Amino acid sequence: FARYPDSAGLGGAGAGSPWSSSPNPASTGMSPAVGPRRWGASAQYSLISFEAGSLVHVASLSGSRETESWGCWQPSVFGLTSNRATTKDGLDFEWEALSGEVQWGKKISSKTSVGANVNYLGSEMDFDLGATDVTTSTADTWGLRLGVLHKATEKLYIGLALDGQYTPSRTTTYDFMGLGVGTVRESDTAWALLGRTGIYTFLTKDLTLYADYQLGYFTDDSGTLITHRIFAGLDQTIIRGLYARVGTVLDVEGNVSLAAGIGLAPSERFLIDLSYQYDMFPEIDPEFGRGDTFGLGLSVLF
Image (cartoon, rainbow, N blue to C red; front, side, top):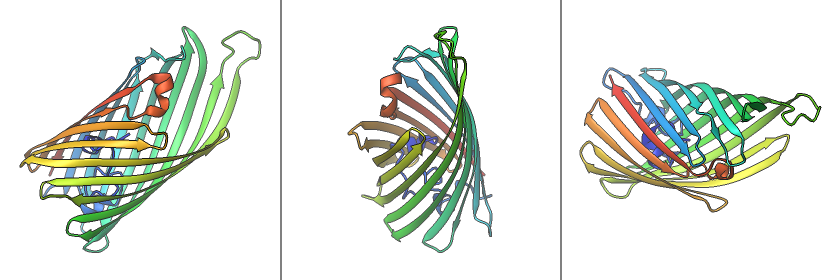
């Protein structure tokens, strides 16, 4: 899930991107999202509409502050909520979450920057059968992301980001069928490790290419999952202040997701980004159906 619509319009690619909406925290040090007074603020909203009927709303606020000695700091908060809708397996689903993060990036030379992101997400998921509770799950996800970004030539950036997550969770399963087994409470801990490398390069003066490869390793008490994904996107300057974006994601199962977006810059200090993503979450298609994701972002630089 790409929270910033400019990145979402590229399919989420951006490990080599120099822009601070990139999934690589080192980009915050390479090109901070700040104006001449070294301040910036942005708001984002995303709607994920699933074919089975679930609607997920995500709203976030981000700020940027560049300092002379300590690099650039980019704190963010976001909240997530869903409606109550029936999944394809017949259960009603609801979800809510609250998250916060602090991202830091700094140039360590004229061509290289490093960065780090510390984040937390607390969530609750409920599955019901009509008026009867089936399961309630709560989880706390703690994450750390590290990155490095290098300007190899005037037209090529190369980046690497490493992400680790720790998620203790608690699930309550109710005796919704009346079998007399009572309420069952279980605890589990999931670990996730992700590595992403990518490039950002100018194909022409007005056309840039983003391309990433991501390897993911996930494990909990139920087993282990290893994933591979390729992200790619193009950003075309139409005229000064107007940008068109397209992107795609290919996973190890052969699923293909698509994305598109538009960026508007009425002035150097005000930015508007719109995005659309098609079937970005194929792994949950069996329960929720295809997902369409719409994004809107507004940024002001001071």
